[in-house]
Amino acid sequence: MSRWWAALWVCFAIVLLPASAQADELRPAYVEMTEQAPDQWALLWKASANSRLGQTGAIMLPQNCAIEGERQREFVGSNILTRLALRCDGPLQGQRIGLKGLELSTTDALVRIAPLDSPMQTVRLTPDQPATTVPGPSVISNVAATYTLLGIEHILMGFDHLFFVLALVLLLKGGWLVAKTVTAFTIAHSLTLVGTTLGWMALPSQPVEAVIALSIVFLAVEVVKSRPDDLRLSERFPWVVAFLFGLLHGFGFAGALAEIGLPDGDVPLALLTFNLGVEIGQLLIVALALAALYGLRQLRQHWVQPAKTAMAYGIGIIATYWFIERTIA
Image (tube, rainbow, N blue to C red; front, top):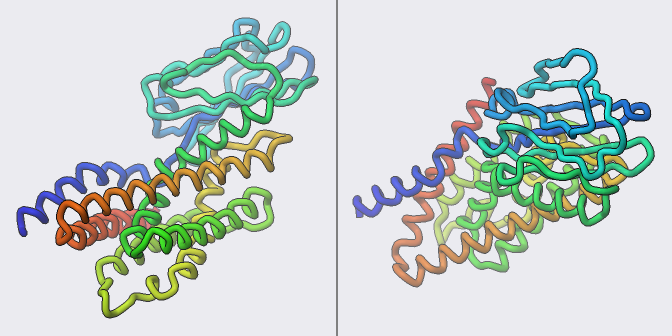
């Protein structure tokens, strides 16, 4: 049994411990070009100061654009903001724009282009595609696809939200019960995500992030102490627990969405599809976790509980580190 536990801990550390430095750090670079007068553009470039892109990246400007005046750079929070005044001869449609160094990072970039006489255009750059051709006027499918993918990536890369959903799967028995509980979590974080993004409510981010970490610790403890003959609070009222903590997680999602930005004129669609992407990511996590537990149960039934306990300890340790880090930061 001791070798089994050791193997579990080694596997868990290899897979999850790198996440300890990446909790909820979906920090895509952001480029916005706004036409302020005919052929006169203002460019804003935002990138995390801690990322490779923030330190070494550079804008790949359209060929018909030239910089006018001095480049302005400033630190705002954990981001570097760069501002440029540009003169562009003619429309940007069909021109190439990108970020140098993006191919060497793990960061995506969102590019928003706002001409005076046509709707905003939104494109997404990735390490595999660090430059792209500026499309025609933004269409619904472009915004919907971009924000759906961003929502999926946020739940998969935002490890604190991922750990919360995973802990629910470890705690509850039965796929239908898990699905209903995760749905309650979704409804709750959707409410605060929309409310915060539209400016109807607000909470300071640091306490929210600390309590989010604490919510994961709570669920990890519930998993470890779970007994068949003595149901825990979260097992007796899983929907209530998931809903209440989901309200807090919604503020976290809103913070990430604020980092990304929303396209003017398409805010409702962007909100809807970002939330849809989060839900798709959650369902993917639930399906994979349930499939893994089912496979383990078929292979060795008596391994299931030790595996759940080991994962709960690992999740709890990492979440405790996040809580301390966010409390003293």
